[in-house]
Image 1 (cartoon, rainbow, N blue to C red):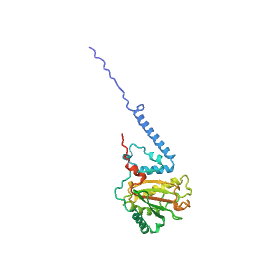
Image 2: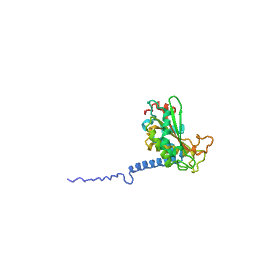
Image 3: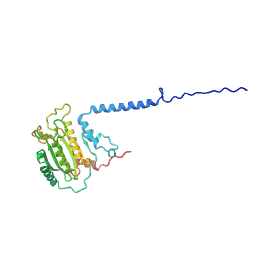
Image 4: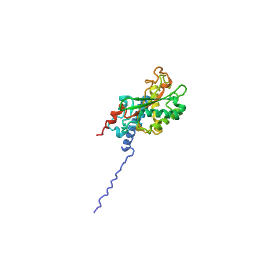
Length: 267
């Protein structure tokens, strides 16, 4: 009886290797990520400096939970400025604004005696429900608060904002920060007065936050270039180069509807 032949089958398994497909998927994901990254860099490079500054300010306060379902930049493209959607409702009784205005004046006269000529305080009533104190922080001839053509605060500007922040942070108020320039065209290349005023407003906001003002108290940061001179008879007056802090005692009328409107829910 003959023994049947023994047949041995050898199967060669190829895992990955030169002709495998797993590395191709990873490589395709890598290329897609790089394309997205360079597309984003290109979009940022063609964005105007003013837009860059305002988008930066917007995302410092962006909250995914309160903005869910809403286009992140819709507010900017609709209004041209960045505003916080979250506005605190002040349920406390309105303080005596006249007294508060005098309080700011006294603080400036005592703690900022050498810099008080840079500050102008105005008390106004916009409605029965809202009263405001406007604080104009102005540059003077040969006495700047920012480096020329820059958003970098000089020590004098930082000191004024520091003293004001120490009072604002203790009050039940909301604050708007505005940047203004005079009518002199900017000499710093592509950076114009719009970009400069916006960047300076952001610098002032950061200085307030650095000195204890809660971010939720700051409801608006915007630059107006030379469109709203403080001294209209001379638009080139250096005092038109300023930071304006508007302190709202009670929800500002322009933000009241936003405060009352519920945040959109996600599907």
